[in-house]
Length: 549
Image (cartoon, rainbow, N blue to C red; front, side, top):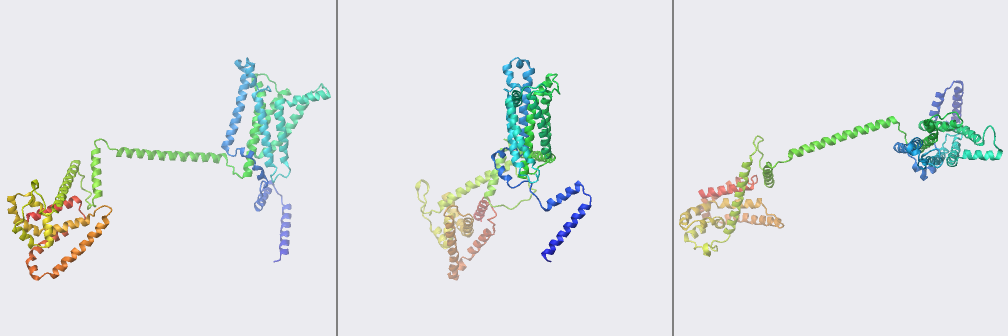
């Protein structure tokens, strides 16, 4: 399809739709809907791009954007105005102040040298500044085709003149100039002519301002209130209202102060609305704010309840776990038993139906463990003494042992060399404690029992040493050395057994079989599942069985 034909068809459709729109009756609602559709097709910005240059000024940072700050400013201004009005009423009606004119003079609002007049001057000046800032934003509005923004120029000038009138009474001063220039008139004085112009001009300006502030309902209400307050003193001046009481006089004299306050707040509210529109800050309704506040309060209360519940649970558990003075001994025993269980390997699980051991039984077991430990220390000391040769040991008062007899040497030479070292090392402590008379009786039985318990006694310390490695920096080297020593020791008996003659096998067959049986019984024991105390008890039991045999 050609481009020219497309444009022609579009023109035809536009003309047809315009002709149909002219024939149909339109209403305000339909026109408003059409405008919304047109804006949706072609969205338009409310303000021009150059308005952002004005916002960069530092004075716009003083605009109260948040509702909280706006309420704070409004409340402070109204509080100041109410204090001045109360002071004015007290200076006239309260006797202690009215009788002292020097004290009451600054409090009276109808005098030019009072605090109230100074505040009114400041308020009108601030109103002029707010009008200037509003003019800088309002002039860049895109939909202001009639040029209504020029109204704010007049507002700036009127605000400045109003502040000067409060300071120097410009109406009376201008009336005196007119009387001096044109002469006095019988009907009206010069000040009355000026007051008429100001009244009619103010009424027109008030109507224009109400139309301007129509979109901001809060500012509109405040502006109407300020206009009514400014009209009251003018009505008194034209004798429309008569002052028959102190209350009426107070209302007429305080009305300019209250009107200036409401005008300032109305201008500030309208400036805040324009600033939020330029900054594109969404305006939230009061109902939504109230609901949000309710939700925040509900969440905070629920969080407090949760915190209080957690704190109460923590205090209860702390109170439950707190031990009294009569329970501290039990707690100490439990801690000691737990520490021993952590150090020892895990024992097999017991049934859940077993009852707890009482404190007396725990103390008994603890004392038994102490006695077992003392016995082990003594055995280690004995073994260290036994490692010394019997010939080098000293007896009482530093005397040497007697020389070994022929029977002892014969029995020791007939045994294997590997078992002889174990016999002299472990069983030499027994005859040391016996007397001379008992030695001769026990020599024969001791030689036989020593040969039987060689294998069992040698395998037990090897297993213990392998299971309990020494701690320290050189522990890993000791493990390697022990493994290297065990390997050649295990290989050496194999070579010796293969090279030994058959005759020696027949002579020592019985003793070796018995030693193998004893070592087999020691190997069947599960040493890893036992604690240290259980191992020591079992070793003692095996030694006693060997001695009895």
